[in-house]
Amino acid sequence: MVDNAAVERGPEGGYGNEGAIIQALAPLPTFSDLRPVVGSWIVGTDPVAMYIREDDVGITRDKARFIPHVII
Image 1 (cartoon, rainbow, N blue to C red):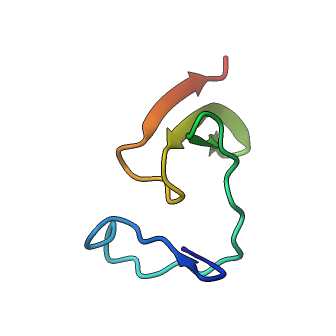
Image 2 (image 1 turned 90 degrees about the horizontal axis):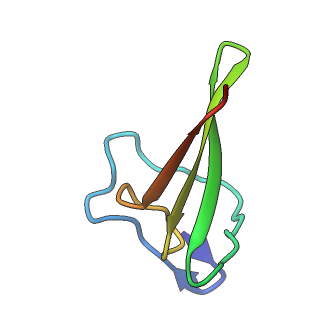
């Protein structure tokens, strides 16, 4: 992740063979030194769940804290 002169790298060896992702930087907010990400799962056109992942680094890792929520 590149933000002007600052560079942050993901895990050694990456996550898989998918290659690189190039997109505009959208920095996560920081609360008590943690950076939350909210996401969702959709099946067809129906929302079925959401989640919050939070990590203490700019690139959310696969070992980040994870809290799933079910939509009933």
